[in-house]
Image 1 (cartoon, rainbow, N blue to C red):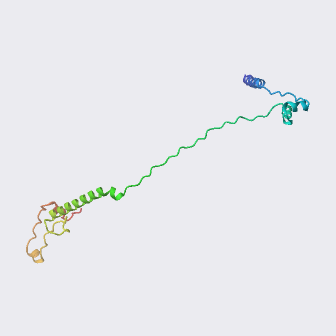
Image 2 (cartoon, rainbow, N blue to C red; image 1 turned 135 degrees about the vertical axis):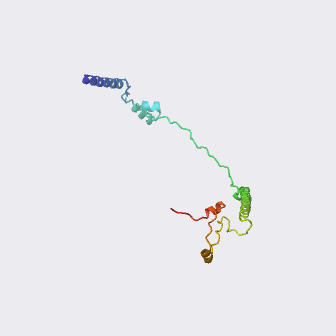
Image 3 (cartoon, one colour; image 1 turned 120 degrees about the vertical axis):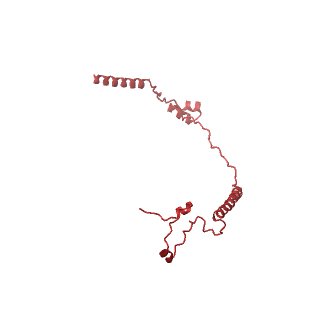
Length: 164
């Protein structure tokens, strides 16, 4: 069954090819006749006309089609100059300097408020000092007083750590 289908398809393909081959027109050229050269010279006026008559088919070339030239458009960019950056950022830098000066002044006022006007900048944030230790005679004669409970957060933070 497979062989009959294959054979049928092959026969069909061969038939189509033969039909196309017989339909194509063939060019039949007439046999060149040798007319007397005198008559050709009288009709054509020369030897070249006689040669063309013998050839039977005149050779021609394909017609020449000229295509239009396509060119890309040209663009010109406008000339631009960059602005001076110092002039562009001058309002921003002036505003930054004002903010910086104001914040420095506020910081100095804050430090002065917490140091109670002592004038030393290094004492800011320092822990309170522990009471002085009693001398040797005071320790031998008197009982050691119990330490006072811390009154502020700074005193509580300055206590020695108890490690377990």
